[in-house]
Length: 179
Image (cartoon, rainbow, N blue to C red; front, side):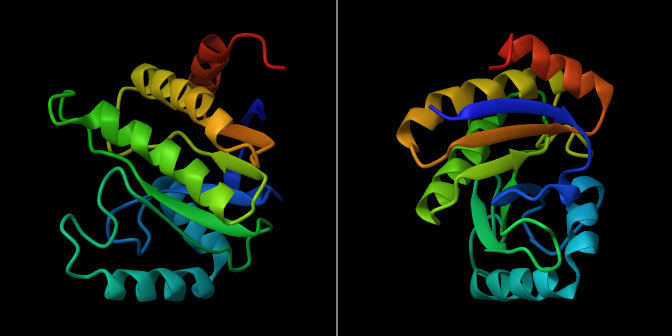
């Protein structure tokens, strides 16, 4: 099973095989980590996302609905690929949000494995403007990664990148001693 790490920092600066973007269903950038990734990557990322969005314009729920993920190049970022995972907007947990959030993490690992990538960095998906409670989101993220890693043997390293101290502490609590 791959190594799981937790860091506090800026995901756009990591030279890993893939970073995960907490994207919106339109794939064309937004606020928070999505906006930061698009800004750091430059216009190449936007153009690639626009092509995907146009090719999936009739997709129910938008080009990339909640719970789904797509992979692109990384533009000017130091990583090789960006995996755009669309987390759910929090509606009190009554609209399948836990399953949709887990799906983001699972599909991201599978896309990375299929692309022959071995290291992947995740932000705290859905905990910003989408309003997912941070503690519940951290528990889902950690448990889903632990469950999925045995199915993705090519993934040697998973990094949870926490922008703020609260998320960092929550991930430490759920992972326990990191090895």
